[in-house]
Image (cartoon, rainbow over all chains, first blue to last red; front, side, top):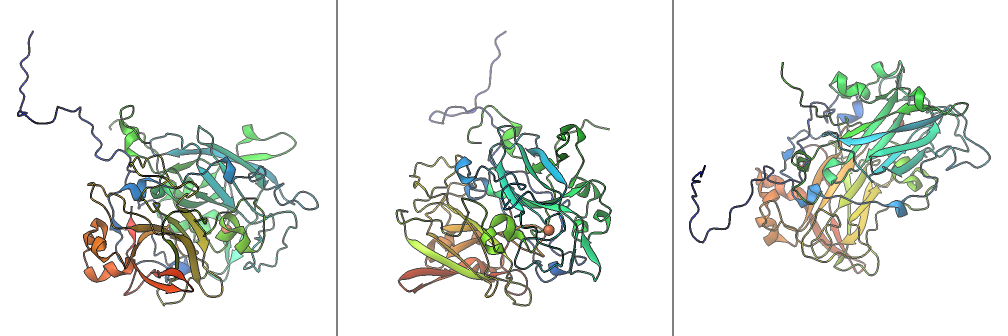
Length: 262
Length: 208
Ligand SMILES: [Fe+2]
């Protein structure tokens, strides 16, 4: 059958182009701020004077937001993902030996490959190697407390460390942080930049921590709690915790194959 | 019931805390651990463009410097191109210029400082050029989710007047919070850019 197609184009118009649904395929999904802590969260007292009170200006993303720094293996040293060895002076640090591993994904479940993941933590006694930390628990001479790695092509990362201890902090008189590891992530665009904290399954301090509870969404809190991953433990050596991290999704992943540049 | 869309949810942000230096700038925490450290000097002697210094302070709602703030900048090179595969403009990359830097405020003065080049113009969403600018990201103890803003240049008045982002700020009086003042000191061009977290002169922050 010969279907007559109506053609509204006039002479001299540009040739027809295939329909591409994404106006700016590189842009990231709008951030769901209901799952993030608000800037002003009075249970975390320091946020009171450090929180913007005017509305954020919502910006449609340009090149400035969809691009971001690129890191490579030249940026990383061979021991950077081994906190048991990267500051060892006279022996291994004291503490429960653990591996933390997981995958960095975006909201479309796509792995975020070759992205920089940085982490830092207190030692097993809950003391940071930091000139501003005055907690009476001891510094461990063999523990620096920081590391970094790049995800592989599947977004997978791992590092070895000792389990950090809980520590007191000045919020209420009797405030204690649950054991946690701080994480810093880049993704592929500066709009994906994220800092967060990982907690450990079963820690009773999680449910009474003001910083945890700046997050208004219970499910979002649960996603920060790493379960013990006994299958990934190294027998007679290390326990393992699993911590997957999700960065903002990107529109091009919705309509793949035809769009370049991601 | 409907089908499930199956998207994951972004991991929630948490404050960087007071000891962010340990992980991101360990020498500021008081020790040396990595072979390669990230820092506040984005340029080498060979980097093309006008070499500049950016300095300022992050101030809280009482006007007190935030002495444990950590700042990162991300910018195009002097030709106006980002060193990232998504930037496919037909402009030169500058070898060795990543366009990204990080630093902490000084513990005693609260001052931060970057050494970089003044970026060229990059196109906005509609293809029109945006005024030269540097993207800032600020975290600290008490900041629950990283704050995004931009620094523009006072000596680019004409480009600033036409910039789509500055023009999107409804209250004209607030646009100036994103404009750094230029001066020169000891033979160097210095731009002063204070970031005010709260109050009458609160910096315009973006939801990007
Ligand atoms: Fe901490």
